[in-house]
Length: 293
Image 1 (tube, rainbow, N blue to C red):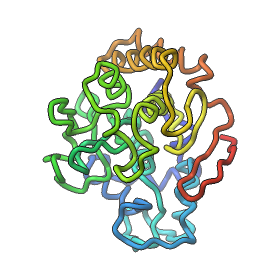
Image 2: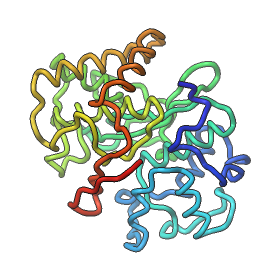
Image 3: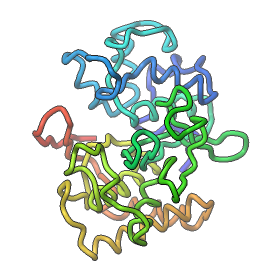
Image 4: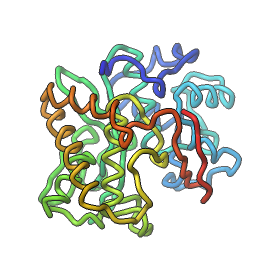
């Protein structure tokens, strides 16, 4: 996949000109992303109920349209927190990916877990990977400055010994299968027992491969072989996930053959590819909705 080209989700559409003057340096671009989008449950502010459904906007062009309706100002013009788009790490990341691709810079969203927000816990998380200075580099657009165990928001290297940094879903799955990690410390939040553990890791591998190949879906979209939250993973499914995770891990090591095989598997395996419809399990309510994408 050409990561310098927009996907159907990152495409800014008729609002592309709004991205033309944005900075491409990680710190500057991240600041704009946070100015446009506020985390719907981790901002420390009471956000309006009237805009809660912002979190279900999958497409950057719809996000930009909504922001334009509220502000009609450049994206870096200050916005009141309570009038920003509500979103999460996926939205901050895809916004940055869209802006970088608009300038011809290869960029992609990376799905995995962050071990730097809560001691002993690994939150599901999405960050940016961009081609900077001749190599793929990670940065977290939600970090304004050094925080917790991260001294530099662009230094996201995973430390297996301490569980700190960012680890891809594929690598986390592999570590779980080798009995190197406690899967019950990987999930949405320590206070949400159902959204953690082996099943959660399994489902995140499916989300990771989708994002890698341009289907930057919501973190609460479900499709393919994703299972009931908190449910078991049988050995047949586990071995299937082993193969997918191994391909993604090898692709990260610049194994071109593995990258091509991962793409082939993604496009041909209905357990991986969402097709044209997903089930939306929005955190706004308990109702599951079938949504055309």
